[in-house]
Image (tube, rainbow, N blue to C red):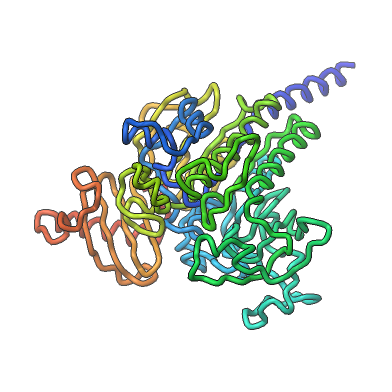
Length: 498
């Protein structure tokens, strides 16, 4: 009898501990700048926002916002590698990421992933949306890697052989290249999910993939589902994510989960749905870019409402950030004062601040104090180390090299710090080192033979005005040399502990 009671108590305590471990939801927006969010527009202009984002505004009000937050890279593919692994993409065998769906996945075996970390801790894991890291499609009836020369004639488009399910996610509902590139199709757990019973593979032209809207000069014709409709991508992602949460709560109520939700918004083509979750979207803002921002917010709303309805929102760490800086605003919205960069110089792709400054907000009721703000320098890379800390998993600096645990900052612990240094690396050899208020721009192909170009103090020169370049000022020569040496050290080894 005593043995039975002991087992019962052990089981009850185990279930209680499992229930207490928080769920983690990370929403990665595509091309969202901080100024795209209503809160920051009101803060910057003192006027009502042009594009309403009530759900993200709510997260800011009920949690912590980071006003010195940066993406893992200024562009999509390398940033997604960093978000998944907690390491800069230049450490991988594809230093600037994998851009083609038919290329070998851009993830060397030595790296762990957020999915694998959560899995090891006993979490259920799920991936939704754009992966943007290649995927190892194979030749039909063979295991030979595809060659580009084969085009689409021999692709086994029905299966993905190296994607989210191999990266540590139990369930995946994926757009390999978002809505902007082939294949224009959804994959569920690595298998093509036909959009309708009569779906088949065909070449999708610009009228159907909507590139005649966003790139009238680019006649983009690529392979996809014959029933492809980019306006339905966001609603379908939200629907699938909602179903996962409901299924998880019903079938495994004591098992925590990690959801990595990579929305297609707000990347081009800008194809907003008519409505999402009862919210009218298309045509409700000054332009289609604004409509996509509103759609993104509605997707966030679906996730929040589903968690609340299931009674688990209060036990969920919920994070929203972006893969890089924002896009140019719609012309009409720009005239009216909308600025995706929130006043910074540069857009997506630039190593200037506007290219990698991103929104970063986190809520966790009872743990994160509502309405708090941090001015510490952080990176989207930090999601990985933070997840590991929440899950109670140890991570190796040989695997997770550049990610800082944000829990001490989120809990406002005394002495908590962000990054001492950040590396920004973009195409064409442009790179920069951020250290406190200082920023050194350099040039060097593949981060070799680095040559200093510009030195700025961001406190006195936040716009990175080249007329105020301090590099050739003898007073700052020693600082520039030290920063160059620091950058070279960052390229060789981990940065998270500097």
